[in-house]
Length: 162
Image (cartoon, rainbow, N blue to C red; front, side, top):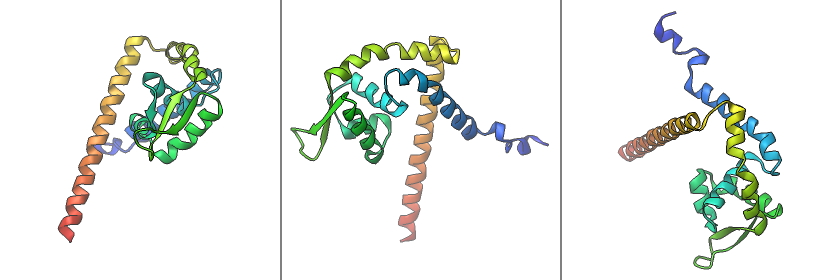
């Protein structure tokens, strides 16, 4: 097989490697987060709130790149666990403000062990984890720009067709 033919090997597909890596890493988080009674998506929401609370649902969705329809059930479950509250925003009654409860704030202390535990489970040191994170963020940024360019090209093409 020549080089071009090898490009179609499954093992060379970026999408395959990222998909398997994502599932594998999230699976490795499961037992660690179970001790906190959190799923991985719930953990991400809590991280966003530990950075800044209260926050609007739209703001949390933007930080996590999640749609409101995906985020709402996660927030409901976290509220049922007693980790957060959802109330109408005083400044805009159409918006929901999400805030931590004392239990949600206290959970942060337990969560401080998660990053170190995960680095150990994945065989990474802090520098390696940060390098991997930088690479992933650059890839996310590149994909977002590619998607923006595709959307703009589609919009321009649709306008030209009219």
